[in-house]
Length: 364
Image (cartoon, rainbow, N blue to C red; front, side):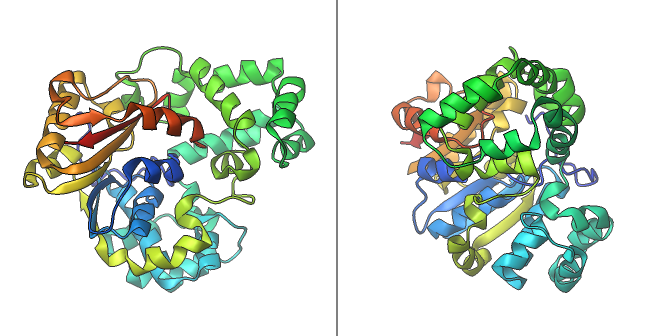
């Protein structure tokens, strides 16, 4: 059923960090103590954020061994490093000792993950969270495109705290120039992003202009939301975080994640295979990332049917759309009930300005 199969022998990291806002995700999922959660692993941070809600079990699944290697090394870093050294290893803070930090924890990795990172010293030295194709894409933007649009002073000024009125004025008078609009349309176009950012297979079912829609969402993130509080925009602009951190990396969440890592299970598999082997009414919360972007209508409907079968009454599923409009099929509407009002409230709060739609459905 899946159009993306497990790939244990493909070494490429697609996403070295999560690019969905965990603050929004946690409000949408409403994880409760005792829950069983199924979560797409991706870069790992959002799966780790689920642990702060004290579920009984979090099953992290991914079709890529490279993605699970990203999550595993972050888990071991939480276990063996303090908070500041964790941020250094990931690349969230400046550091000249990342290879030393890696050596201090590598014995805690499984052999396959240890071999994976031993073979990538350049990524380790630069920061674990810098090494995905998507992060390299933003690095190219930061180094070669953004300087053609704005000066260093203009970029710094974008992240100065202020009111929405001041942000609107700065965007209109300084930021939104012709070079910005033209170069963003080029850099965010499907051909460029397929080449440099996301794998071409991820656009198989995409429709419409990615660039035009993304420009509108970026404007929202730069004006309605505050860039000074936006870790995702800070990483894109500076290659690290400046004054804001994603949920999983905040100091106040460090100990609780560390204390609950024993509840996390990593699985190299497709989401469909995990669902097929799961008993009826056995999973409470589903963090599905943007998985339906990659599936046909028929495959998506089959996955929704399995979620309806395995989901426990009172639970929730959360997923995102970028360019592919996927939603629960009408025939399952009684079992998976859309929480459209909540989704409409939360989507504008999304600090990671990539997605056109947020879907939240309650299991009945």
